[in-house]
Image (cartoon, rainbow, N blue to C red):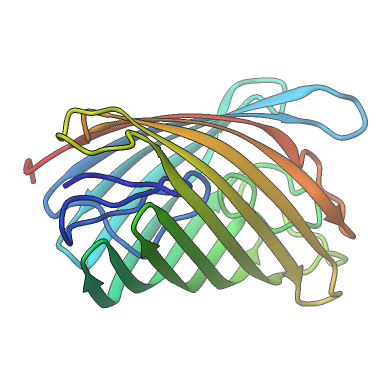
Length: 267
Protein backbone atom coordinates (compact mmCIF):
# COMPACT_ATOMS: atom_id res chain seq x y z
CA UNK A 1 0.00 0.00 0.00
CA UNK A 2 2.17 2.79 -1.23
CA UNK A 3 1.29 6.24 -0.12
CA UNK A 4 1.17 9.26 -2.32
CA UNK A 5 0.58 12.65 -1.23
CA UNK A 6 -0.60 15.89 -2.09
CA UNK A 7 -0.33 17.74 0.52
CA UNK A 8 0.45 14.47 1.43
CA UNK A 9 -0.04 12.78 -1.68
CA UNK A 10 0.07 9.85 -3.92
CA UNK A 11 -0.71 6.66 -5.33
CA UNK A 12 0.06 3.28 -4.31
CA UNK A 13 0.07 -0.01 -5.72
CA UNK A 14 -2.57 -0.96 -8.16
CA UNK A 15 -5.86 0.42 -6.77
CA UNK A 16 -4.92 0.75 -3.11
CA UNK A 17 -3.86 4.41 -3.09
CA UNK A 18 -4.22 6.71 -0.13
CA UNK A 19 -3.64 10.45 0.08
CA UNK A 20 -2.42 12.20 3.17
CA UNK A 21 -2.56 15.97 3.52
CA UNK A 22 -0.70 18.38 5.79
CA UNK A 23 -3.35 20.91 6.88
CA UNK A 24 -6.58 19.32 5.64
CA UNK A 25 -7.88 15.75 5.65
CA UNK A 26 -8.54 13.91 2.35
CA UNK A 27 -11.67 11.86 1.69
CA UNK A 28 -9.65 8.64 2.09
CA UNK A 29 -9.11 6.99 5.47
CA UNK A 30 -6.15 5.41 7.20
CA UNK A 31 -5.84 1.58 7.04
CA UNK A 32 -8.46 -0.45 8.93
CA UNK A 33 -7.55 -1.43 12.52
CA UNK A 34 -4.47 0.80 12.51
CA UNK A 35 -3.49 3.36 15.14
CA UNK A 36 -1.84 6.66 14.25
CA UNK A 37 0.21 8.82 16.62
CA UNK A 38 0.63 12.45 15.52
CA UNK A 39 2.52 15.35 17.10
CA UNK A 40 1.91 18.77 15.52
CA UNK A 41 4.06 21.79 16.40
CA UNK A 42 3.07 25.35 15.42
CA UNK A 43 5.08 28.57 15.76
CA UNK A 44 2.67 31.41 14.95
CA UNK A 45 3.75 35.05 14.84
CA UNK A 46 1.53 37.20 17.05
CA UNK A 47 0.25 40.27 15.26
CA UNK A 48 1.51 43.65 16.38
CA UNK A 49 4.29 42.53 18.73
CA UNK A 50 6.20 40.01 16.59
CA UNK A 51 6.28 37.37 19.34
CA UNK A 52 5.97 33.73 18.31
CA UNK A 53 3.39 31.61 20.16
CA UNK A 54 4.06 27.87 20.42
CA UNK A 55 1.17 25.44 20.03
CA UNK A 56 1.53 21.68 20.56
CA UNK A 57 -1.21 19.27 19.45
CA UNK A 58 -0.73 15.57 20.35
CA UNK A 59 -3.24 13.36 18.56
CA UNK A 60 -4.39 9.74 18.37
CA UNK A 61 -6.06 8.42 15.19
CA UNK A 62 -7.90 5.13 14.73
CA UNK A 63 -8.98 3.43 11.51
CA UNK A 64 -12.16 1.80 12.81
CA UNK A 65 -12.99 0.24 9.43
CA UNK A 66 -12.51 1.06 5.75
CA UNK A 67 -15.15 3.81 5.93
CA UNK A 68 -14.81 5.28 9.44
CA UNK A 69 -11.83 7.10 10.99
CA UNK A 70 -11.70 8.69 14.48
CA UNK A 71 -9.31 11.28 15.99
CA UNK A 72 -8.81 12.60 19.53
CA UNK A 73 -6.39 15.40 20.38
CA UNK A 74 -5.31 17.94 23.00
CA UNK A 75 -4.41 21.63 22.59
CA UNK A 76 -1.42 22.95 24.52
CA UNK A 77 -0.03 26.48 24.16
CA UNK A 78 2.17 29.14 25.76
CA UNK A 79 -0.02 31.96 24.43
CA UNK A 80 -1.06 32.96 27.95
CA UNK A 81 2.65 33.15 28.99
CA UNK A 82 2.51 29.73 30.68
CA UNK A 83 2.52 26.42 28.79
CA UNK A 84 -0.89 24.94 29.59
CA UNK A 85 -3.51 22.52 28.31
CA UNK A 86 -6.29 24.64 26.76
CA UNK A 87 -8.68 21.89 25.66
CA UNK A 88 -9.17 19.20 23.05
CA UNK A 89 -11.39 17.87 20.30
CA UNK A 90 -12.95 14.74 18.80
CA UNK A 91 -13.06 14.28 15.02
CA UNK A 92 -14.83 11.66 12.88
CA UNK A 93 -14.77 11.09 9.13
CA UNK A 94 -17.04 8.71 7.17
CA UNK A 95 -16.22 7.87 3.55
CA UNK A 96 -19.47 7.23 1.68
CA UNK A 97 -18.35 7.20 -1.98
CA UNK A 98 -15.45 5.44 -3.73
CA UNK A 99 -14.84 5.15 -7.47
CA UNK A 100 -11.54 3.31 -8.04
CA UNK A 101 -9.59 2.69 -11.23
CA UNK A 102 -5.98 1.89 -12.07
CA UNK A 103 -3.75 4.72 -10.74
CA UNK A 104 -6.77 6.94 -10.06
CA UNK A 105 -9.81 7.23 -7.85
CA UNK A 106 -12.48 9.66 -6.68
CA UNK A 107 -13.73 9.66 -3.10
CA UNK A 108 -16.14 11.66 -0.94
CA UNK A 109 -16.53 11.76 2.82
CA UNK A 110 -18.51 13.52 5.54
CA UNK A 111 -16.76 14.76 8.66
CA UNK A 112 -17.48 16.38 11.99
CA UNK A 113 -15.55 17.89 14.90
CA UNK A 114 -16.51 18.81 18.46
CA UNK A 115 -14.07 21.00 20.41
CA UNK A 116 -13.79 22.36 23.93
CA UNK A 117 -11.40 25.18 24.83
CA UNK A 118 -10.73 27.20 27.97
CA UNK A 119 -8.60 29.99 26.49
CA UNK A 120 -9.61 33.64 26.11
CA UNK A 121 -11.36 34.52 22.82
CA UNK A 122 -9.34 37.26 21.15
CA UNK A 123 -10.06 37.19 17.40
CA UNK A 124 -12.83 37.28 14.79
CA UNK A 125 -11.72 33.99 13.19
CA UNK A 126 -13.49 30.85 14.44
CA UNK A 127 -10.85 28.12 14.86
CA UNK A 128 -11.88 24.83 16.46
CA UNK A 129 -8.36 23.43 16.20
CA UNK A 130 -6.98 25.16 19.29
CA UNK A 131 -8.89 28.43 19.88
CA UNK A 132 -12.70 28.05 20.07
CA UNK A 133 -15.24 25.69 21.58
CA UNK A 134 -17.94 24.52 19.17
CA UNK A 135 -18.78 22.04 16.45
CA UNK A 136 -18.19 21.61 12.71
CA UNK A 137 -19.73 19.46 9.96
CA UNK A 138 -18.77 19.23 6.30
CA UNK A 139 -17.94 17.33 3.11
CA UNK A 140 -14.64 16.44 1.40
CA UNK A 141 -14.04 15.37 -2.23
CA UNK A 142 -10.65 13.99 -3.34
CA UNK A 143 -9.48 13.07 -6.86
CA UNK A 144 -6.30 11.06 -7.39
CA UNK A 145 -4.74 11.11 -10.87
CA UNK A 146 -1.62 8.93 -10.83
CA UNK A 147 0.99 11.13 -9.09
CA UNK A 148 -1.26 14.15 -8.54
CA UNK A 149 -4.04 14.56 -5.98
CA UNK A 150 -6.68 17.30 -5.80
CA UNK A 151 -8.94 17.77 -2.80
CA UNK A 152 -11.59 20.27 -1.72
CA UNK A 153 -13.77 20.67 1.37
CA UNK A 154 -16.60 22.85 2.65
CA UNK A 155 -17.99 22.93 6.18
CA UNK A 156 -20.26 24.78 8.58
CA UNK A 157 -18.70 25.93 11.87
CA UNK A 158 -20.60 26.96 15.02
CA UNK A 159 -18.77 28.54 17.95
CA UNK A 160 -20.00 28.54 21.55
CA UNK A 161 -18.65 30.13 24.73
CA UNK A 162 -15.25 28.89 25.84
CA UNK A 163 -14.78 27.38 29.29
CA UNK A 164 -13.33 29.01 32.40
CA UNK A 165 -15.72 31.97 32.00
CA UNK A 166 -14.32 33.01 28.60
CA UNK A 167 -17.53 33.89 26.80
CA UNK A 168 -17.76 34.68 23.11
CA UNK A 169 -18.16 38.48 22.81
CA UNK A 170 -21.51 39.62 21.41
CA UNK A 171 -19.76 41.60 18.66
CA UNK A 172 -18.17 38.44 17.18
CA UNK A 173 -19.83 36.06 14.74
CA UNK A 174 -20.87 32.69 16.17
CA UNK A 175 -20.92 30.82 12.84
CA UNK A 176 -18.92 30.56 9.64
CA UNK A 177 -18.33 28.59 6.46
CA UNK A 178 -14.87 27.07 5.97
CA UNK A 179 -13.53 26.00 2.57
CA UNK A 180 -10.28 24.57 1.26
CA UNK A 181 -8.54 23.48 -1.93
CA UNK A 182 -5.44 21.30 -1.91
CA UNK A 183 -3.03 20.24 -4.64
CA UNK A 184 -0.05 17.92 -4.38
CA UNK A 185 2.39 15.82 -6.33
CA UNK A 186 4.69 12.90 -5.59
CA UNK A 187 8.18 14.11 -6.53
CA UNK A 188 10.28 11.09 -5.45
CA UNK A 189 10.78 8.25 -6.11
CA UNK A 190 10.42 8.56 -9.85
CA UNK A 191 10.00 4.80 -10.12
CA UNK A 192 8.35 2.67 -7.48
CA UNK A 193 10.20 -0.53 -6.54
CA UNK A 194 9.14 -1.29 -2.96
CA UNK A 195 7.35 -0.20 0.21
CA UNK A 196 10.60 0.82 1.89
CA UNK A 197 11.34 3.70 -0.47
CA UNK A 198 11.26 7.23 0.91
CA UNK A 199 8.55 9.39 -0.66
CA UNK A 200 8.93 13.15 -1.12
CA UNK A 201 5.69 15.05 -1.69
CA UNK A 202 5.23 18.70 -2.63
CA UNK A 203 1.95 20.35 -1.62
CA UNK A 204 0.08 23.64 -1.72
CA UNK A 205 -3.16 24.17 0.22
CA UNK A 206 -5.55 27.14 0.26
CA UNK A 207 -7.70 27.67 3.36
CA UNK A 208 -10.51 30.17 3.74
CA UNK A 209 -13.36 31.22 6.02
CA UNK A 210 -16.38 33.53 5.71
CA UNK A 211 -18.18 34.61 8.88
CA UNK A 212 -21.96 34.25 8.85
CA UNK A 213 -23.00 37.30 10.85
CA UNK A 214 -20.91 40.01 9.18
CA UNK A 215 -19.44 38.53 5.97
CA UNK A 216 -15.80 39.03 7.00
CA UNK A 217 -13.39 36.56 5.39
CA UNK A 218 -9.79 35.47 4.94
CA UNK A 219 -7.70 33.29 2.62
CA UNK A 220 -4.39 31.59 3.48
CA UNK A 221 -1.88 29.57 1.47
CA UNK A 222 0.20 26.73 2.95
CA UNK A 223 3.11 25.38 0.88
CA UNK A 224 4.71 22.29 2.42
CA UNK A 225 7.05 19.35 1.96
CA UNK A 226 6.39 15.86 3.24
CA UNK A 227 8.59 12.81 3.73
CA UNK A 228 7.11 9.31 4.03
CA UNK A 229 9.56 6.80 5.51
CA UNK A 230 9.06 3.05 5.02
CA UNK A 231 5.35 3.65 4.26
CA UNK A 232 4.82 4.12 8.00
CA UNK A 233 6.45 7.30 9.38
CA UNK A 234 5.75 10.83 8.16
CA UNK A 235 7.39 14.24 8.56
CA UNK A 236 5.64 17.46 7.43
CA UNK A 237 7.24 20.89 7.17
CA UNK A 238 5.16 23.88 6.06
CA UNK A 239 4.52 27.60 6.36
CA UNK A 240 1.09 29.26 6.61
CA UNK A 241 0.80 32.73 5.04
CA UNK A 242 -2.24 34.98 5.01
CA UNK A 243 -3.11 36.17 1.48
CA UNK A 244 -5.86 38.56 2.54
CA UNK A 245 -8.21 39.15 5.47
CA UNK A 246 -11.03 41.51 6.41
CA UNK A 247 -11.22 40.06 9.95
CA UNK A 248 -8.92 40.36 12.94
CA UNK A 249 -6.69 37.30 13.50
CA UNK A 250 -4.14 37.28 16.31
CA UNK A 251 -1.51 35.09 14.64
CA UNK A 252 -2.28 34.04 11.05
CA UNK A 253 1.29 33.41 9.84
CA UNK A 254 3.73 30.78 11.05
CA UNK A 255 5.52 27.45 10.77
CA UNK A 256 4.28 23.87 11.05
CA UNK A 257 6.40 20.83 11.94
CA UNK A 258 4.59 17.50 12.32
CA UNK A 259 5.64 13.94 13.11
CA UNK A 260 3.37 10.97 12.57
CA UNK A 261 3.71 7.19 12.93
CA UNK A 262 1.29 4.39 11.98
CA UNK A 263 0.92 1.10 13.84
CA UNK A 264 -0.82 -1.45 11.61
CA UNK A 265 -3.32 -4.13 12.68
CA UNK A 266 -3.11 -3.56 16.42
CA UNK A 267 -6.76 -2.75 17.18
